[in-house]
Length: 247
Image (cartoon, rainbow, N blue to C red; front, side):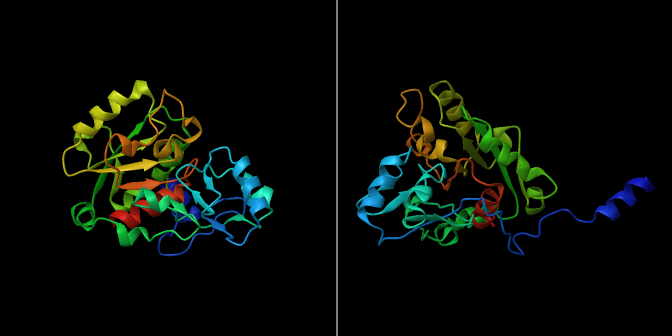
């Protein structure tokens, strides 16, 4: 026991101080993109043609973060003259249309539903469903339980049974084979409940968009209260979304 206490004392506290202090992610991280509206039409057209997700609109010069997989192709092609990805990981929204942006995202806190904060502000239990996900989004949700993020210190936990949950967290493109199980899980969660779409697959179908085997957007099946874009979203993005929306 003394060795354990000595080891803990020597290691110190490993938990992140976020949100009390700001967190800087590595330079290679791609967060909220900033768009130069004055970029030449030729560069814009080249980026639109190269985008694997059809996430860029040439006319409005906007990007759909719900489709974007943050591959950085547009930034490389334009050499930053059209699109530049910043290190800002706070890119979640509560209205899907706000995912179509030039980099100026609507404030998540301003659009959060206040009655959810009143109901779940001190305790939020979530049931996660991987609806044919690749395990990337799932892995970055799992790490929220590690000592560095320690999601439970905020009163937010993932539970095994939907009967014990306040909300549903969905990852993956929602395949035809998972659709029934997902809807049954949703129905099993008692009202009032919240629904969170995590990752481009659950928001728009992601790389599988257009396939008859998947559902192109969780919101086409059930009401969605929180959209967390990314492929996968960084754990800090998930943490910021949960704390801002519910706390």
